[in-house]
Figure (cartoon, chains in turn cyan, blue):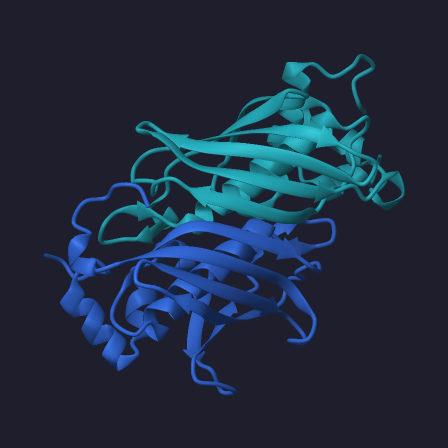
Length: 174
Length: 160
């Protein structure tokens, strides 16, 4: 169940950790949620050798950065809404400042800029130790409560002890 | 020096041979998500394919592929297509990308084809369309800008 109080920073961090753990791609990449709340999210992608786009020069694939910004901006949407809704990506725009380098985690920060009745406007940045790598602008469509599966909010805020169980199992008793 | 995109002789040779497999073998993330390329049976360029892997899923409820994985597939396609279609061996480095998601990408094979809209001395513009069941119903379209470097001039990695 959602908490009986407005969710705080710890509730949102747990909820979004669950959110990225349920997404098979980000679960496989062990994406971590460092901070989360209505003001924004901060995620950490640990290093994996197959994040490379140029193995000989040790540069991160640009698509990894797009994937990470899509995920971070999408995660930032949930705490910014009155109630969690399913919000698919409408479009993304990514600017690449410099390539990411091998061996280092990538930190993603994203926040919601504006929520309207139909669209959520977001922005995000990525960085490694040397500084910023890329920025992104992502717009997400609000499908509304009618198109959000029953139990979506409950699954996000389920008891911490159920943290590792997949969504589908929890929907059974939602 | 090891073989790689930065090696102008290696790039020129693999390009002349149309050896896109050699290029993909140096792109671990493209291999992770299951990108392959073949000669386009309906055209002169390449037809790209994204394997519908469980780890490419971004939404388990629908289920649907991760939009960011679809974008990474399309960026890989644009890069390789540009390397093959350019007038001479050039090493593209992405500057920016814009992608529109038109339909849910289901967990099934995704195909993509690219159009090189402009190849200037320093910059290239590539348009990519990705589809699943029918090319007339694209799941996403993207356009990308690349800086075109001479491979030998890229010993040092600065910004784009």
